[in-house]
Image 1 (cartoon, helix red, strand yellow):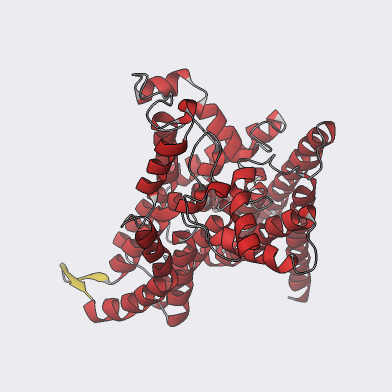
Image 2: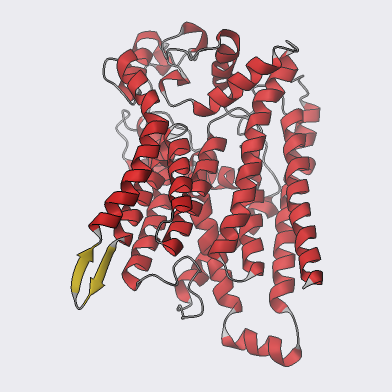
Length: 465
């Protein structure tokens, strides 16, 4: 047992040290504005650091050139974290590089919290520690996954909110939604609601699964535990409303009832956008008369979306080795295929679902599939009708369920009787060595991407941060 504990401790230390080394390297090395849209996003933390207050979305100093609108219309909680951290640092120095690193550092901290919670989630989702480590490494060290935690954006807080929601939901399914799980789930919903609209599907799924949990079948009749549902659901709702209502009330007051700010943002763009980017004159696939199918057939949407989901750095101009893309595509394809084709058994059900009914398990997986599809559908619609930008970061909210099904497929493979019998007969730790090999390839792919491709690009195109 002591040997196992020491080994586990070594893996945990390696996991976090690797994250810190790679994360800090990217944070410091990336030129300012080189990551996607960082310049325009950084305007909001700068405003908060300078004025100590939140900007109106119409504020000219945060408005995006050409596009005519600002990110101030959308939830800006991550920018508030960054802006007030910068405000504090300005008490000691006004150095622009220090302030930029402070804003980026906030996201790196959010990334570390995400990595930690991914480990906790892996322990809940997988009985076997080998599968848990594969899931954790795959979700945390996908090149694009760690990249978004190293520059100014809202994606980082969004990914943290998703893992918090899933962790709280998992604990709740095991404990009939104890006080702890309700608080965790509420915190995840708050962070999600105030960071990124694209991930709102997780909020809806959390509500649906929470509701379905209290619906049981007995003697062929459905019974809904209304009192327990209202008590615990009311508690979560109060926490969430306390956490998010201030922002939507503020938006409703500032923007004449538009509490989401979306219509007002479009109106702002209509007023200030240049002709090439004006909502009425911008060239899109839709207003050129092409169908959605035409776009998918005659554009690089599929290729760019898939490759940048795996990892394209900089302003979508730093690619990694073709073998990294082939490795991840093969792994994801094979994992999903194994998850679908290998029939389940009583031994394979994941820990968070083993005490629930079959109907709830099916509904759970339907919701996870919905959470994977929703970011893709939104990205597809946006590229077709608004602005053609097939970027993998828009798809990252699907990462955790995707990694679950990939790992689940591998878990099924290693639980097949022939492999289990071979391992017992010849005393060969196939599962152990396979997980070590897979985590090693994932680690190597990340290091190759960062130090073999991104850093040489930055050195060849060096611009001071």
